Image 1 (cartoon, rainbow, N blue to C red):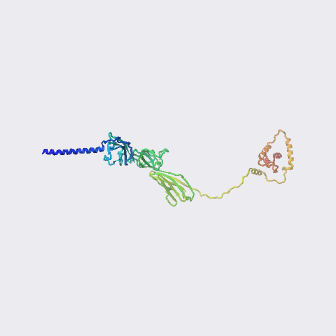
Image 2 (spheres, rainbow, N blue to C red):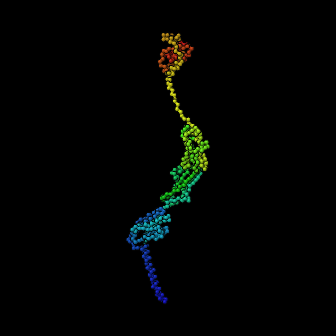
Image 3 (cartoon, one colour):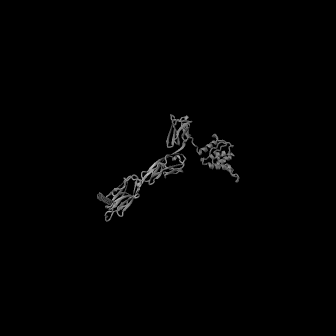
Length: 464
């Protein structure tokens, strides 16, 4: 029985060995077809171009290309260098990663496909040819990540009091590391104090020293690293301050019946309650008054229209602004302007006297009424003029040579020379019957204006 059993086992053992031999042959055949040396050609396979490095945004597909010449029956494989993981051999995908794929073009260009790229896929990839010795080259896959602002590390909307210090913070992730830029949402310049204004601020932290109402508004934290899309976050900066009122014209005049508008400008935040008063009574909209308010951010333009000004409307008006932080007011006085009246005006047409007329009027004012036409005893007639002249010449020749002419005569001669331009028609003229008590100046004046120098001297001598 035992012998029979052994005989029976022998064939079974031989059959098992045959099966093992057959399996070894099949494995060697598969291995040989997959990764063993084959009869070499005269030249052998080679790489005709290096692997181009690839940069792909996360979530996209990355494709690396390996170009081979004279491959013949040799095989091309792709490996992950950092983990020494075989990804593909020829047309077969070895790794269990379903995102990996391989394609080729006429066994010359072999493409490694990585779909839905992740940041963990970043690294070096090797293309191998199973020659002896092995031939290989390496390419790099760069995975870039668009910026993303971290809400946990970024400031939210802020409410501060005017004059306090403010620090705005913005943090972002991405590959490469994003740059942070601050801008105003309305496009206005950013005020940094001391008359310094800039269009933008660089850096993750934006500090404002002693913030004021002009710096209130929405700011944008913009993160960019060259990988689209650029992202931003809006941060609202609210500055609280007590009301303030400004008035351009505090004294306004109006006529009766005229329509007049009073104006005030208020600034306050939180937003203020605004109204007009007259003698501590709030003015409401009606037939006589029309108050109106227009606001822009923290500014309010207050108007009060008086439809027809009456005498009772003249006086002081107040514009009042009030919020949770305080209250302020401004005063405008409305005064009366009389209504103009039209009256006829009289224009004088009196002629302005000339120099000659003025001299003649002075002369005639000094003269007495016109005497009678008959010659008096003191008149000098034409008949006696020659006798008087001759006697005066004889008297003058008889005077001593050292005796100087009288000062009165010199004054008369000088006066004659000065007044020739006033009265050019100097000649013999009738002399009025003047008492001898008349002053010498009066006599000289008549002589200068009506006679020659010689006649004046004669007349003075006769009067003396």
